[in-house]
Amino acid sequence: MENIFTDEYFMKKALAEAETAFEKGEIPVGAVIVIDNRVIARSHNLTELLHDVTAHAEMQAITSAANYLGGKYLKNCTLYVTLEPCQMCAGALYWSQITKIVYGASDENRGFSKLGTQLHPKTEVVSGILDNECSLLMRAFFRTKR
Image (cartoon, rainbow, N blue to C red):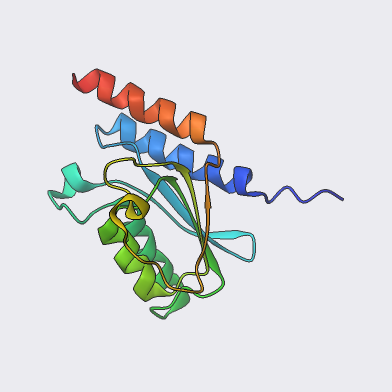
């Protein structure tokens, strides 16, 4: 039997969150956190709604997952996020000791890899999953703003 719980499967769930953000006028970044092939947190950017520059999708997901698990560490968890995390989110992910980060589109200007932000040494990173779909949504959003 084929495993349907692939990186693409969960990235589509993150993309659905990003589409919700888009509809709310938020920068369309979506995230889900998974443990044992089960989504335990889902979120999208809320910086405009909450008037909070720290209300990135990843930050919301980290808080939600930690509350679900009853602890601050996200060991054995995977974050799926449509855009490469910024250095703020990468810092929080470092401290959460998340096991794996999977992102769609790279952020050439503000992404953690461009800025040299370190993740936890045991964190695995996979990039480019549904990159085209994630990038198209981001470009469509900024076209409406210009």
